[in-house]
Image (tube, rainbow, N blue to C red; front, side, top):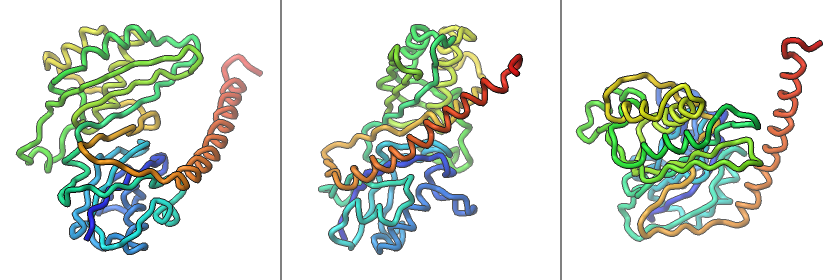
Amino acid sequence: MERIALKIGYLGTHYHGFQVQPQSAVPTIEGALFEALTALQIIEDRAIANYAAAGRTDKGVHAFAQVLSFDTAQRNLSPRMINSMLPRDIWVFGLAKPSTPSFNARKDALSRTYRYYLYAPPNTDLDVARIQDAAARFIGTHDFSNFAQAPGHHEQEAEHFSPIREITRLEISHDANSSFITIEIAANSFLRKMVRKIVTALTLVGRGSRACEWVDALLEREITEAIEPAPPYGLVLANVTYPEISFVEDEYAKRHIVARLTEALLMHASTAAVLERMIREYAPGTS
């Protein structure tokens, strides 16, 4: 058996999250991956293979660089081989052979980086300076109970569960020529829906609905407030870092991935233009 790590990407739009849901037949990223890996006889049983994934993205969330690890007896693996069995919106583009047989994609991750694309068209009511001020308050170690979905019973019972997390970086960028504000956030790990709830808080401050001090009060648990998570379609798992592991990226596979994504971009850009026109057509006062 050989320890393998794969770097994968996906569009989460048509999936009910990353993780397989045993009691449901809904499509998931992990379910599609297992189908491909078992069909190619790369994995027969996830427990025997010591399978692990770096993160469990929610329904509708995307990934540039999710990471999987598992044991396999299959030799001469390549991303292009696995891609031949995957749907067009899931792909493998990198492979590594960790030097330690105990490498675990989840437990050995040093940090995870998420990126959120917040729509901010010209003349937006979002104040980028206010968002940046609020963002700075999240950096460091805090209790993020106000910025997470309530833990399930299995999480509550786990001895290691804690709402304490350390955000090492939270950067806000906005190009004057872009219709999006980019929010990039890195931490050792994240609670469920934590990133999207932080995005909602930043949006409320950016619109002037809340003051920056409101963020301080939430982090210090002076107040408790239910914050709705921002929509999932703007969120992407951008990177996961590890000590002493190097992925070899398959250039052939990447060329085919770019072709797939270009096709998807053309479709969505055209759909956006149609929707924009429909909004103008049906706006009150038009005839």
